Length: 266
Image (tube, rainbow, N blue to C red; front, top):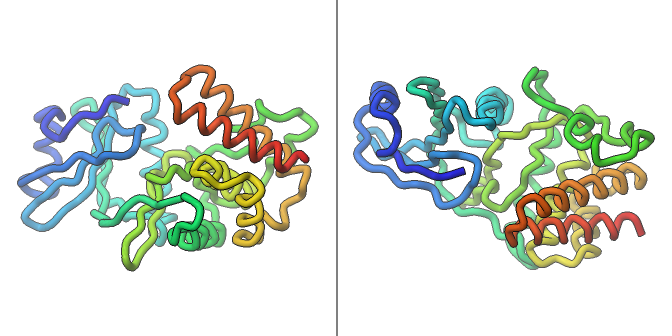
């Protein structure tokens, strides 16, 4: 969506924020991310915070609220939500400021073990029961045959969006950002989503698959029929997205997803 700056927010929203954190002395818009109309670091006398938000009438307001609702369950892996506001036609989430850089997924990157570690940490977190969360079955059943849908069942908490911008690397922490689509499903579904990203970053499909088997017990032990069904569903989903919006990055993701699906179907 179109990104705006802090100064473009309604005066009423700016005043409501400053009631909580004091005067905003400076602001810096984030470079990455595509799902927030505002994403900025705010500088105050007490330090920095990060805010993100969208208009209340935007179709993705549900995703904004899911991120709010899931935060207490993932605070060991994600920046802590300090507060949220819905006023002046906007929904705003305010997080602790977390310094760092986005992950490098290219072959040989030193970030890859840290990325694997945070996925394994996520797999060990109990899945909360939130009414706003969907399951893998709900999100991807349209892309598999009815006889395959049982393969998508699971009880684990998943993130499901491992764009490099969503992994923040610093000297002492690895954080998982943008919890707009927390999902309930089999633990191996998150590694599948990540491997598509690795292939897009330059890993051959066979090498990405082998790395996944080594790093993630859930991927190594997953039933082959289940993985074939889900990777096929990912390929169909990304192909549909690329046909609707043929921007190069979406075309590349569709190609990467098809390569993983072909690898697991062979």
